[in-house]
Length: 426
Image 1 (cartoon, rainbow, N blue to C red):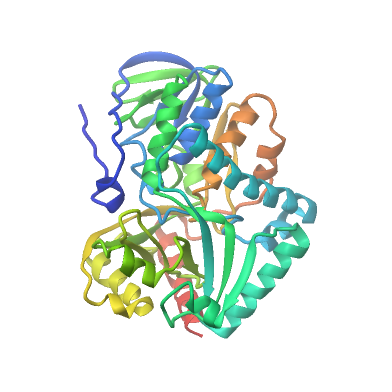
Image 2: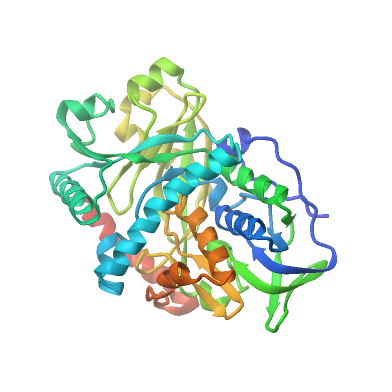
């Protein structure tokens, strides 16, 4: 029997105890088969089970093995694309509805954690920071837009001594503090959702890859040691869709991202660096992000790879970026260094839709999915239950394949990213 395990990361080392779920064997029937055991898949399964559906969840590795269990853990309002791209695609009224859904996604996250008593070190407070003056102007413009257009009243602009009182670094010149966004331990959150789904009646099968989906009513989902006959399928594979749905794979690009965790700094030292337990992210295209852990480490992410993961260089290169922000950590060891893939779309807007009337999919969170993935699962459950208005709003966002086909799209994107890296330096 396969025995996959989580990668060697700080999250895996500090994960809450969780049961192993046996692989699928034989043939079973279900109302809905969910493929993918990240936040999106676990939320989809949970919300469907709560509506009375018989649900089976397939995970090729372990629950939370992919991006949901490896990410920076920042739960941020809005979309990676920004609102203007949504306005251009759908118009101001529908873009406003999407904004409201993103706000609701944070409320849903809070509700799920409280309702199911998920111990995931959830804290509120997140700040985007500017490195140069033009970015400061961009943060001011964002605050004005969100307050005036959308009535979002959780923002506070900080600079000068007010910024110094929050972060002990000279790298940033301004920040936009959001009291309604936050951060958490993403693997423990995902494991908590899976536990809630299991308690609601979902059958979870780990070490069970979906190899083929045969169209029909019912659908047949073929796995290595068995198959499922199901009325509906919800694909929540994101960067790990592989060859299961080539049409979907062409519209996303797996992007490698990297995080390190320092040795424990102690409460006094970490509080000196970061006065409040908030998450921080700069607004470069190739960005840095960081936050405190429950045991007083600094978790710092940065760098991206569009040409594949480079685990050999992860610790040194990410540590170098960390020291550019906090040079006073020169003497501190790195205890964990890891990487993983997130999936991005060309527009950085989420890609939700149907491959067939009974085959739904969620992908393209573009590094902005901690809160939105949970909400996306709720929307799929609504749609399968016959209330598809909000899901269909997302399905109307246009998406294009990455140029260059299977062989050339990665080299083409690497070249394009050189321009963005140079732009970050200006």
